[in-house]
Each structure stands twice: as structure tokens, then as C-alpha cells.
Amino acid sequence: MLSVVRVHLPSDIPIVGCELTPYVLLRRPDRTVTTDDVSEINPLDGHFLRYKWYRVQSDKKVAVCSIHPSEQATLQCLGCVKAKIPVAKSYHCTPKCFSDAWQHHRVLHDRAASAVNDNGNEEEELFGRFNNSGSGSSNTTLSASASSASLTNGAAPVYPAAITQRSGGETWFEVGRSKTYTPTADDIGHVLKFECVVVDAETKLTVGHSSTLLTSRVIPAPSPSPRRMIPVDGMGHLDAEGRITSSGSFTVLSYNILSDSYASSELYNYFPSWALSWPYRRQNLLREIVGYRADIICLQEVQSDHYEEFFAPELDKHGYYGLYKKKTNEVFLGNANTIDGCATFFRRDRFSHVKKYEVEFNKAAQSLTDAMIPTSQRKTALNRLVKDNVALIVVLEAKVNNQPVDNPGKRQLLCVANTHVNVHDDLKDVKLWQVHTLLKGLEKIAASADIPMLVCGDFNSVPGSAPHSLLAMGKVDPSHPDLAVDPLTILHPRTKLVHQLPLVSAYSSFARTIGVGYEQHRRRLDSTTNEPLFTNVTRDFIGSLDYIFYTADSLVVESLLELLDEESLRKDTALPSPEWSSDHIALLAEFRCCKNRSRR
Image 1: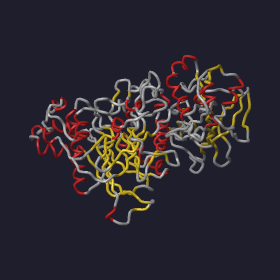
Image 2: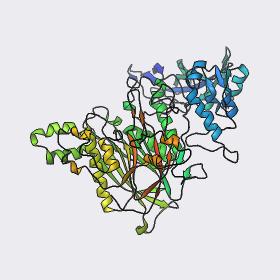
Image 3: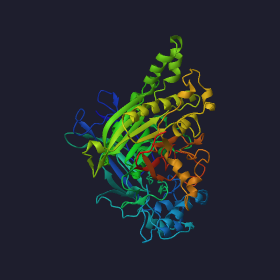
Image 4: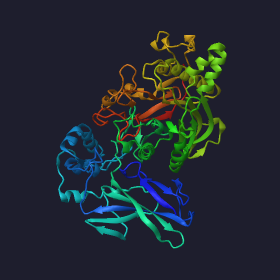
């Protein structure tokens, strides 16, 4: 007879909005074991599995710490209450927790105070909202009445009418009847119970004992401080949805989301295991990406299975069409479904797809070695050059009033390149060769059509490096120290390390902007290169690797997503964090097309 051997959850800390999928191990009548589901529609040997989820409602109300969400709160910041900041952000587990988090927490008060517009209404900020009516901060021990009044997460909980059981000060409410369950705001602070039992398909009676498990208390999904769009040179303005825009403008997002295959607990041992799990990170990443409301999205480190099963269908619901290029797998030895790649999405109401080019640097390496490397050295050369990296180039056509432009002579085309360059720092020649190869391909497209271009991605190259110099300056100084690493002489002659595209880094626009209020943004730039101080932050590295380049003869930067600073990242932590689910930060720029000027 069918029986349940074991049930467990990958993580026992449930988070609002993150689907819980228990692992259920079954023993078939022939004594073999399986994890396949046995539904009422397809019973096995006359039996199927019935699932139920319960919310365990305790008479004792519990608040959750906003900094350490797995801990019970004992303090509440009354300044947050006064400023009408979301109540979940006001709780702390200990006085030390509140003190350590104060520099970060104070930003919430400052943002709340500045978010009231001239009419006294709340100004919507990108990726989050704050209600506000004042500022200031104090803290006090939670009283029973204060706790009871604020644990409904801003809304009265709606429970099923049927109470399944009440015992020992606890009431169990049935909240789900499927194998999976996604906690809601009503579940915050409560324990969930999962029940699995074998049922006779004919009599519908249960057979044997039910298998159950209890979770920890449900915690709210941590949310970071909102990142606002900052107008450059004061040219942007707020639209009806609170987004900075101008006539004919569009926004572009570039984001390395950290592939799950790279997110090991050994590498990120400073990161809570529940927040490192893919079910949590994918929902948090999706919420962040959708919250930016970009017209074009360039993602790196997107696993092929995650693109097909999650990002493509989820972003489709939000009006995006996606294109994907998986890395090649000549070096990769793992599961083919977990190979990552580059994904480019665009809003269907803003653009239509014209053409796609796929750049496989492995193929370019084969062509290079065939042409330049002696036969006896080709294997060694390929071992150095073949790294599976790719680029995805997409040509889009802008729509006018949500319709394609009818007159071919007035087509508004845009070329968007999305890439992830090799990571190994000891392969400086390979990094530069990959960037040079990509730029030469883009030059060919530019020669065939007068078209604005964007070059986005994770270039794994810090500001001032040879790849960055080639992108930003159009050339590499022959005396650049990176050129000393060239065992295959693929960078010779040095004079070939040039291109004619008038590329400029979008975020360098902050350095060219003057006026009151821009000093804080300029302080987040490297004074030598005018690039962000960091776009990648781990315990072992902090620096900029990600960029959005644009052709300055055809595009103008209107606004930029503000950069993070030390106060925006929680004290003594690196990325990823419970709030930010990648070790990179997202870059977002708004552009406007302009009349062509002369090229380099």
C-alpha cells in the first residue's frame, strides 16, 4: 500500500510571498520509493495523497525583528510609528540590534520626511513606498497592547470561517489544500503546519496516520530602502505614476542577478540560509526588477531553467517579451539546465523585436586560433580562450502610440547588447579580447544602419582596466599594465585595440551634473574614472564591474537610479543580503534620442 516515509522543507523559515514546497518521500506498494506526486486524478493502487496547510494562531501576539526577521521583537521605534513608516520596519529584537542598525534606520526617517510633496501627498518612490507625516526616532519596550494592535500588518486578518482545532491556547485555521503554499501577510508571526495523508480513492477515507511538520514563524519579506531616479541636469520630470520621464524617453536596466548555481553557502557563508534559497531569492529579485518598471531589461547569470520556468512567464505577465542566450558548455561540467546566460526583455507596448545576434566567444576563439596560432599551439590557446562566455545583441523598433511606425523611412531602431565577460582576473588578455570582439561586431551593425546603441552587462572589469578603457575611451594606451599579460599575442598589434563607437558610461553623467543636491551622488563615484565606487560587494571584493554604455551621438541621459552608499547597505554586511538578493546592484538609466552628431 502507498505510504509516506518522510516530509520536510528545505528551509523551515517561511517568508511572505515565497512558495513553500515540501519534500514528500513515498513508498509504493512494490516497496520502491519516489518523490512523485500522487493526485486524486491519477491514484496509485487505489490511493492518493491529500494535503492541507494550517495557520497556527496563538493567543499570544508576536512581532518580528526587522533586522533579524527570524528573531522575536522586543523593541519598537516610535519615530517610525509617528512617521507612518510601515510598521514591520519599526521592530527590533534587542537594544544592540537597534543601535547597530541606527545609521541605516535613520535613512528611513529622512526619506519619510522628504517624501511629502507640496500638496502634502505621498510621493511614490521607485521600488517601495513610505507614508510619512514627521520624523525623529525613539524606542520603547513593546507592551501587550501595542503588540496586539500592530501585528495585522496594516489590515485586519481574514481567516476561514471553519476552525479546525483549538487546544492549549492555539487555534488552527485551514489555509490551503495543495502541496505548495505561499504565505501571506496574514501569516506573519504565526507558525504554519503542513499535513500529508494517504486517502482511499474509492471511500475517500484516510488510511493510516497523517505526516505533519511545523514551520518557524512566518516572517515578512525584507525590503530595502527605495532607490530613487535622479534627473541629470534637471531635465527629467515626474509622470503620473511618479516615474521620472520625458517625451520620447525610455529606461534600461542592467542587473547580474547571481545564478543559483553560484550561490553556495560556502561562498556566501555570511548570508542567512533561508535568504540564500532560490525560492526566496527569485521572488525578491522579481519584485525588485518589476518595481523598477524599466522598458528594457538586461539580466546576466540567468540559469536556462530559471529563464524558461520563471523569469520568462513571470515577466510576460507584466507585459515583457524575452530573448535569451545560454552560455556554451564546452567548459561547464554540471547539469546543462543550470548553465546561465544573458536574458534581454522589453515591453511589448514600447518596442517590437527586429533582429537578434548571438555572440559565442568560443566560436570566435576557434576562428582566431585557426588564423593566428600555429597548429602545435592551438590546443593550449583554446584552453585559455574558450570560457563559454556569450553576448546577446537585440535590435528593437520603437512603437509610436503603441503601434509600429508605418513609414520605413522614420523607423526608430535601437540596438541593445547584453553580455557577461569572463570573470578570471588572471586572464586579462581574454577579458580584453572578448570586449574587443563584441565591439567589432557592434561596429559592423553600426556601419549597416545609423542606429543608437546600448552596451550593458557585467564586464568583470574595474574602472581604468584595459577593457573599461577600450569601452569608455575608444582605445587602450599601449603602455597599459593589463597588456603585459598576452601569452598568445592575441592583442598585437596594439594599434588594433580601438573602435569608432562614441560610447559613454551612463553613470558618469553624475560627475557632469552640478547643482544643489548632487554632491551626495558625486561622492559615490570614483573621482578618477567617474564610475560608481561599487556595483559588486562581497566579503572578498568591493568595486565596479557592471556598466551601461550608450552612443553619445544619438542618445542623451535623462535620469539615473541612485547609487547605493554605505548607509544603504546594512552595517557590517556584504551582498547578497536579505534585502538585496544578488551580490551585484542594479543599474537603471533613462535615455532620450537626440539628433546625430559626428562619430569618433
